[in-house]
Image (cartoon, rainbow, N blue to C red; front, side, top):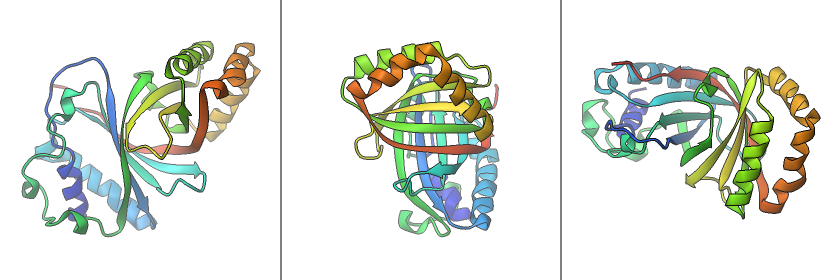
Length: 236
């Protein structure tokens, strides 16, 4: 666990400032055994309760993949969400050895295998969206961003759900090949997601989205995950 804590600290030294546009950074992992998942969650609990991270300004979310296509080779994700870019100014810097005993980056992981990492930004999102524990994510290759974004905005506006939210995110770097944007549908569980999907499909205004999104984009991937842990910044 100490080695896992080291890599988390390595990439999570941050500074605090203010700006309006939000950003996120996500680590994609593969965890092969249930005991490894428990180790991961114990590490996160210890990591985020430590004195070194006590002033952490980021929201941290640990998720477990619930369903995926054959190209999704990670089982878990750790998201770092920031309301502005300034919180990432010192990302990856700091006293590497002060928090854990790891020596070399390639020796940090034993039972938890790193797959990839991504940077992105929410374009249309609900600040209360993380109260929903289940999410389905579609990756798109967008060829006409203004038209796609306008169409997505109309689609989201036309589907204000009572038991979930729909979001649009921009992929900035590290995304799977071809993916430029993500659509995210959040709900409490798979059953509620399926009911919400029925509601969306029955909405006449939804047809505009389904009839036109493929003119400006291609769907590349899809998967779903559930939130295992949510860590909110400590209030001052």
